[in-house]
Image 1: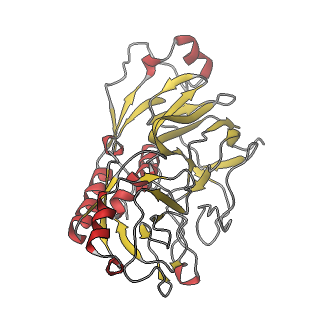
Image 2 (image 1 turned 90 degrees about the vertical axis):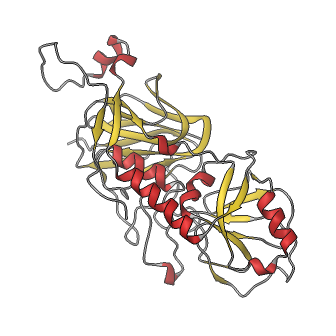
Length: 351
């Protein structure tokens, strides 16, 4: 019996599998990992009607090409404004598409954004490591980045209609010019002039950044009380200032502790916004309150709890292409028409 799965035909660096994260092991020095942009990750999973924190393929700027084996598979793509195509036919950056055997889904860097997610209407049949399928790229807990030729086995696959649709997700369009932070916990290591310089920037993301940390380039910050502290715990979004004065924002694969003063922390609702910035894009920081950070997180969850809108794209493809996909499961009288849109209510609620 032929196994069902997704075969990796080509891939750039940094393409991994990420679920909602590896929780409960921080006391042992193991951080959560999980997606760089949790909002986009959850959106892709929503579109294929699987739990929000299900495993999906995280794609970086190097892109990926995939083909189903054993059976056609329905997948959703969501995240930055990437180029998405099926056998060369262009799809929207946020798409739901049923990909037939021997057909090729291609996701490449597009106009903006640094990460996107490919979720499957089914479940990756992989062995969890410490309760999670997330790949921590530094420690290799959960495995390393996907290689050409790898097959990701899929079970419990399901068919979703329409077969090809745009995912209408306006919440994914987040301007990155301003990133909100809460000052501290060691902002007292910097005088008021340095705090102002930190907020004003402007900053850009270094091309040396990765899933562990975004290294920022901009004005060098000076410490008022030295740059060493007794190592303490970090959080996703912690902004360390080492001795050289260039901020380091800790991201999904962050270390559990650190010994540099942390001037501020990026709020959870803006971590994905920051993650989607490319090297060279200018931005600045803005302070906010804990209450406003909680409200921003609640607003994000409220967006995700609404029915998702799928806009059919049947008429975007030539008839020869549609016939070649052989995806018809039955017979119609030829009079049925697709609605303008299809709303899908989520089966699971965000935590």
